[in-house]
Length: 132
Image (cartoon, rainbow, N blue to C red; front, side, top):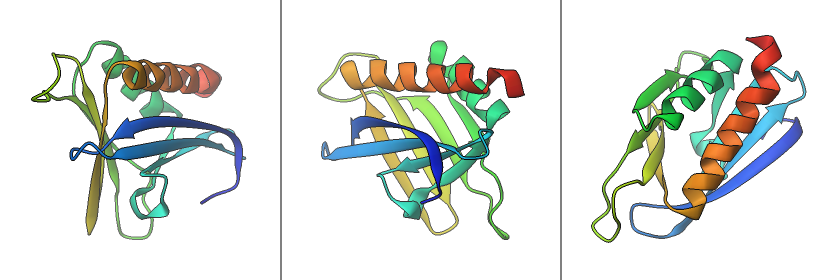
């Protein structure tokens, strides 16, 4: 994990209904967000301010979106949000997913965890707004 100035954590669940936390770190440059789905480096995606703003805009309207992370070597990780339907829940859950060349992860946010995800991404967008 990178050195960070501020950290946000949001609990979600895996598609198999296991607990899964996503960590959002504002890095010390105060311009980059490191997103750690599953709270691990294995699925980390680095995003700049305009990508967080784009995620926030689409999340506000429940519209699917996928953004490119900052390139690490020859790889370009991707992070996305999309509405999902759960067999045990009414409409409304959102899935955050990260894709890397050899791995991917999905984290589902529903009810209170979805509120926390929306608030976290909105706060990150506000913090980074002067940069955009």
